[in-house]
Amino acid sequence: MSGHSKWKNIMHKKGKTDAQRASVFTKISKEIVIAVKAGGGDPDSNSKLRELIAKAKSNNVPNDNIKRTIEKALGNDSANYEEITYEGYGPAGIAVIVKTATDNRNRTAGNVRHYFDKFGGNMGTSGCVSFLFAEKGLILITDEDGEIDEDKLMEDAMESGAEDFSGEEGVYEIYTEPDDLYAVRDALVALGYEIESAEPDMVPSTYVNLDNEDDIKHMNLLLEYLEEDDDVQNVYHNWENCD
Image (cartoon, rainbow, N blue to C red; front, side):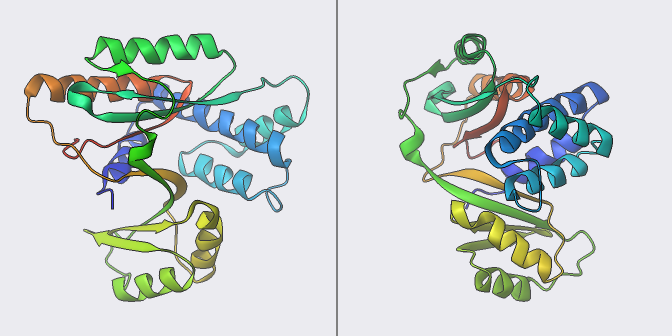
């Protein structure tokens, strides 16, 4: 469906510096706070929290940090984060969706608008590009050692409730309906598969290529600035030939 841009993003994040890894944990900690406030602090009964704990551990976040974040969220001294989605256009009309978690919507809106303006795009109104995307769940499984039988994995995924499957160079993408994401993930874990990540995704219905070098440069910079902003949780776009 969406190529391996999601996988490339994950690999890119894993190779970041200490300062950048700290930024990744800042983003995950916001997600944990939101999940705890919505569903409680017990990962056994809060599937979203359970997934975020796994996500934090995969990013080498110490257990003590995770525990402190959960305890803080259960108290009254943690920030109240608001989840806000912004939509806009990058260079040459690339559709961009920016999902944020913020305790200051004026700051976040101003920053996101500035990034769009600075790199040849513009922030639009709600709904201006979201109709070009479908909400899905995306499960990633990697097989660096070539031990997974692709046909068997596809069969197991489909029988577990997945709706689409693709594999290339030892990376398997399993798509689900949004509400089925964690059920499919749990079913695959029960079958012995090691999950790299399981997260909501926004899948474009069409993709756009960029051929102009300036447009490519500015689009890369727009994505870089957005992803480095602590208020930005996820960025989705329909650029086909992204790095």
